Each structure stands twice: as C-alpha cells, then as structure tokens.
Image 1 (cartoon, rainbow, N blue to C red):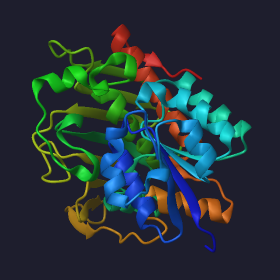
Image 2: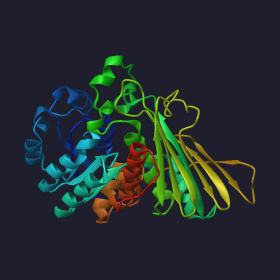
Image 3: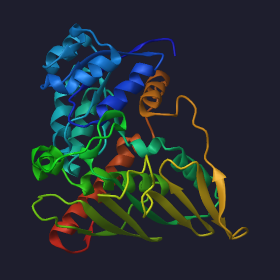
Image 4: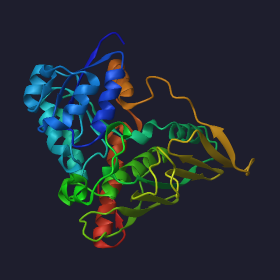
Length: 357
C-alpha cells in the first residue's frame, strides 16, 4: 500500500466511534483528517487520545467533508438515523464505513445501498464479532468441511447494557436517569437489545450458512416495566436444513470481554458430522466430530494484517480495488437485515412470519 488514506469520523452517537478511530490512528497508511459531531463534548476524548488539532474538529458535517476531503468516512449515528446520514454523506464522494447494526429496517438499508452506489463508492457495514479470532476459526473449519454441512446456528450474545461502557470498553456505572436520557432506550431511535445484537447473530449466521436464508422467523421479546424497548429477545429461524436460534441480552451477569457470563456469549454450530463451539474472545474453539466425538479444544487462529480489524480490511480492499466480502458486505448484511425485520414483525404481531424481499 503506497498511499495514505484520509479518514473522517462523523457522528458520535455510538461509542464504537472511539474504537474505530483508534484503528485508523494506528494504521500505518491512514490519517484522521477530521472528526465531526454537533455536540463538541462527545469528541473531547478522541481529540485528546489522537492529538487532533482544532482545525480537524468540526460541528458541521458539510464543513468537515469539504475541508478534510476524506477517502473514507466512519459513520456512527443512532440506528434509526443510519439511512439519513448515509444519504447526506454519500454525495461527497467518500467510501462509507457504518458501525453495526446495518439499519433500523430493510427499507433504510436499501436507501443506504442505493445512495452509495449512485456515488460509485463502497458501503461497508462493520460487525465487530467478525474480527473475533474464535469466530474466524470456526468459519475456516466450516469451509474445510470439518463438521459437514451446517444444520444449526445457536447464538447468545449481549452485555450488561450499552450504558455500562464507553469507547475502548472503559467501564462506567450508569444511574437510573441515564436510561431515560439515552437513545439506546428510545424506540424511535432504534434502541433495544434486539436491534443492537440480533444483527450480529443473523448476519454472521448468514455467513456461516453460506448465504442461505431462513424460510420463516418466530421472535419473542421481554417487556421491561417503564421501558419502551426490549432488553431480551429470542428468535427462532426455520431453514430448509433445520432450526437456528438467536438470543440477545442486555443484562448479562458480566461483560463477555471481561468474564464470560453464563450462558456464554458466542456461537455453537451443529453440522451433519460434528459441532463447533465458538465463544466470544476465548482462546480456543471446542470441536466434536464423528471420528472424535469427545470434545477437543483447538487454539484459535492468529489474525494478521490486514485481517485483524475493519479499518485494516477496508483499506486493503480499497487499495486492491475489490469489494468487501462476508458480513461486512451489503449483500450479506442485507440478508441479516431481512431476518431482523422479520423478527421485529414477529414480536410485534406475536406470530411466525416469512421474510420480505
């Protein structure tokens, strides 16, 4: 890679902006040329961490894009605003990396795809679990046929809640009033554990399933007193090969990046000839096969550049002139969004539904 890629971060609603900017800051061929948010105080941490001069800090996105002229924009608005912000940014000609989830609904996802396609640029949807070594290892084992054809994906994931940590997983202790003030707990902004975490499970599940789509979806959500969004959801997807289950939870006993809670966060894959358990951040995956039915631990693969994080991977694809693939691609993420939309309809209508085109 011979050039330096100009990167701007716009809208700091999602705390993962800090993590993504750190990846850009540490990349040898990237430069943070601008950051922008309407609330300057939300950028203070990044300004200090990445030593950004005042002329690279903006409160108006147009001024940021015109002055910084980025090659890639990292976008982290509230889920319900993903489509609006993508349509605002796309005409300026930058590639766009959107932090998960894809969108609030399939209609918005398609708006995003069209907006970036009109500009002739790439749309990338980052799912941080894609870069967890255990899940990368599980995918390799699947492709090598270790457990035969995949029949079931079992997913359980979440954390103590989105208000318990900030960028770089810095812990905080939220008060009761924080839920009232946070977009994470507002339906109109795309809050709730289902929209926060189901996209992870079904998008990586689609990756594991090789692009296969379910026939129908059944979802149940909790109804916490005093809240307008869920903190717990369970989705069962019926495929032509069997049933898969996807469970989301705000309120795990511990955060999986510090101590794995029980149930453990991650995936269990059942194939025709074996099983793989792939838990978040763990150093091994556990495998059963017909030849070796006793569970055996295998060390996870070591991840090397440019396949360690989304910024490395995106810049690699842009430099090579190839589209992003897997869960980060609009094609795979769109199937995930179809399943999420079906889950939302199923929970709301309290019945089993089919995917919409």
